[in-house]
Image (cartoon, rainbow, N blue to C red):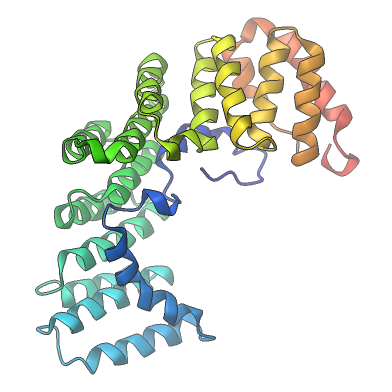
Length: 324
């Protein structure tokens, strides 16, 4: 989950916690060794003191030396060029090299290149193109969790096509049904919960969070974003006791995670436990001294608007002068 230090955008990203494109290494598609093999040369090229364009030129020349696109090595090489073009935001060139390699490149390379093109269109908010390319990526590698989760993130951002996103999750659940895939299933339940949050179906979201938690995946257990989102969903249905319980889980993972500290301050303020509330809010300010909009808090508890206004004033008074 990525939080930018922009005071107007904090809560926009809460509901996207489960589906962030910027996911950790343990959430990449199942065949991690294959992924490393594919991306290794790209990373090596980028690590040189060359501009990205020079890196592309160098890799193109390398591809040409491998004969033509009827050669599997050459085709896979062209897929890597396609990926590099997505990194300099040139989708037309990325697609050109993707198509050049398409007839013979292996499915792992096709999947990786298609996913990068989809990600570029997603960043540009060209949702239809992004969805089309994610679907392509999954045709080449149906069990690719990265593509499935990224598609969910796209759906959450564009607020469209939830049906397809859930269908991909269901399909992945079938693929990862074995006892050796606890992590994958836990993450997929987490994704489904995040999508339900964006649909404002909070009780259904909580059901999915519970299923994810019950699997006791160590990756989920140590994922601070999971607990923050879980906590915030309970807040949305005004269950402050459970919101606090899951918020404490987030702080067990990261005691200085300012979002959890800020939320815990609000939860306790709403329960009129002001000493605890102030303690959490002061810790949040210490970690991240920015004023945060309370609109989402007021939206859920409009009957406590006056009390929330006092909480806002407390924060303003304790912020460093330059951030007030």
